[in-house]
Length: 325
Ligand code: ZN
Image 1 (cartoon, protein in one colour):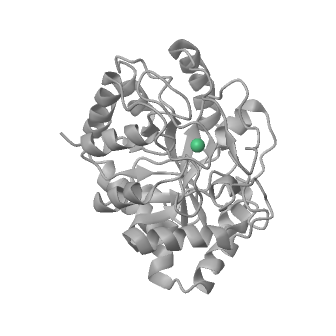
Image 2 (cartoon, rainbow, N blue to C red):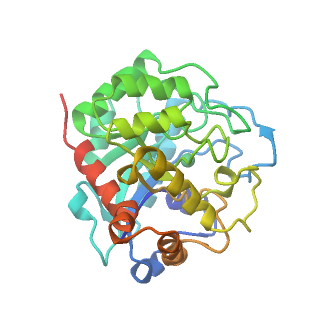
Image 3 (cartoon, rainbow, N blue to C red):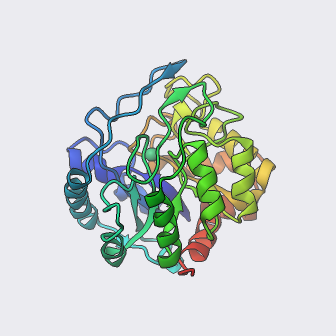
């Protein structure tokens, strides 16, 4: 069974773009049981392939709360129309069906006074990233840069710190992917839940702002959290080039690196399917068995494969979704 940390199927359907990776009809055969389905309010010019081999894109403009909230309603309608079950507990993930965690990628749609957080929780929201790669009322995301440290700007605002506390209180997972390094450490200090990066890879292998440094990986491991390895070729390759001919073994290299650094209990998948260019030979959900075979070929045994493919995600979801004081 495979549980995944991130896909952008909803944004793709909302824009009316062709679905490239999340073919739900292939889920059964591929043993794909679902995972995090993002509600992402796009910036005006999103989705362009990242240039290479070196680049430093500016941060996109902030999106006003009212506009983001309006678009999030439309995204939510798309989400609810998907042929999937809403996941609010780890037990919702079972072989033979697809369960979807309602994830907000960037908290722009939330009122900065947090008055709309509980209504979203009641609708099923169980995960949110404070930011996408832009600034908002809560924090600042990393601009897309390569090569670059993720230390690119200021940390959480007062509203951002309140949002982390409120998420801990309700049992909403706080996602660290897209956050800059100062924001990451603010969450690490504040949060009482395991640290989670749903779709980021290892900076030591690919020095993109979107990846986690060794120190960040260590903090995730020490907290009992998990890193979902991002399959985007721009975040996998040492040269950062957006080359879809990248072998899927490059995903295995990141899994091995993170497992070697912080342990097999702290690494999982965070595909970024339908949000990024991934290795062509993987293709999408239908290709996931090839990735599992590549893990086995690299020496991962049954238990290690079970942890990476689903057990680590299910453990961390169970730990995180318990409300905390
Ligand atoms: Zn993302």
